[in-house]
View: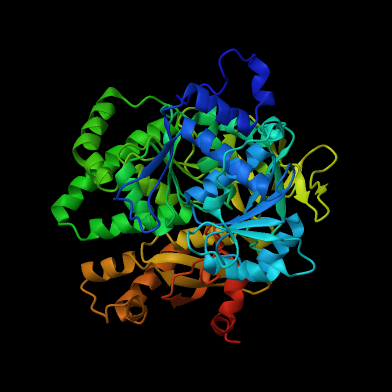
Length: 612
């Protein structure tokens, strides 16, 4: 169980008055020696020495840091921008600013200059905290931009001054009595943060979230999650993403848990093996890549060993099937599963650091069902969830405590209501639904209707048991020239069920048939080639042109088409070698596809698939 969030002596309704500074004070008082935050030096690989602060040390450190920011003129209600990796300066500044009554705003490290300018002008921040000299170069032009009120840059990296404020110089002993009176004076209705949407289409919008909304969501999540007290969390997604804000900052404060910062997402596997967490959250692309890596290893094992693993996985899936139906597995199956888990599955999971996981979760985009079934074969049930930045993260979730359906995104948490409009669009309202979008003048523009409902833009359906099933984004639905509606995500996930296909984009709006861009999986493709005796030039690009690989991808597309309606079937495809990612622009920092960017980048290839 997670720890009781209510402080001893508080009335039962005290949670309605809860703020983040009050949680920090509680943790320092009730759990002073518990570890709160751990990190490695910037060059750390997950295996070296870690620096750790306790909750008492966090409280003292953030007070000193808040005094430093106050010395820069930051006060109540001021927005402060931050562009840093998941490093302690980011995490600690976030809490220090909140204690000061300011509003921290994280910016994606991959944000383009135009996006940075838009965000800086929209929130009217006068101070920005950046990692080092490279990031400072992106921000310095704004210091002299007449339309941007930015006045100062704070640099986290030592020695990267460039005439700017050094982060280390902010740490000072608070002395003024007035400062002590103003610290920690946040009210539940005050803004806690502004999270800018990652911009799959259009300019990012600033989602204003209050203390009350964030902590209502935290309480709702605790009602459906079963975790050990003070559970550890590996923090590797950007803080500009609502998922990591909740999982990596707000929930740890709420639960008095232990955060391990992972500044380089590429090193998350090493950190997982080191920490062996009881909970692990990954967006679908992370679970897909882990799945591809495990499949690649399994494909190289002797046939006899694979047969043993396959048999154990079949037992695990049978066991999960009973749990999914809300039934108790028969005693005989419990015994077989316990033996398979102990002798076969746990040693395999331990090699990846996942042997202690009791809560595996995903959100942000539709999760391919074959990936969920793959992990179920190891006894790991990925609890898929759904929500938006505007819903403070999770609005619906599967839960081992309250029930799950593989392929669905679960049922509503206690802080929201969910309904479907006539066209299937999902609408939500409730305690954890946002206040509105930030305007440059500081006011908030509501996006709710007269009854408080938010139209989410997602399309879905609910089953008889109240589980929500996503079908697509409203604006991403493909309408063919014959007037048929097609969910691209449905088709793309069917194509990605083959391990060779790592990424897929389906195209066909106002066309008579669908085509696809397919990307070979950089990890699974070489392993498949080795297992099938395919010799190329040692590169993924070489495999793209190999006849055996092309023939296998043909079979994968045909297999996907066999499970789809005629309208949904892919008639032609282009096979690509280069993986899509945030750095090259095809994915957002939260690893969602930027469809417009991909269509523009490969416009000639898509036109060629239609013979244009």
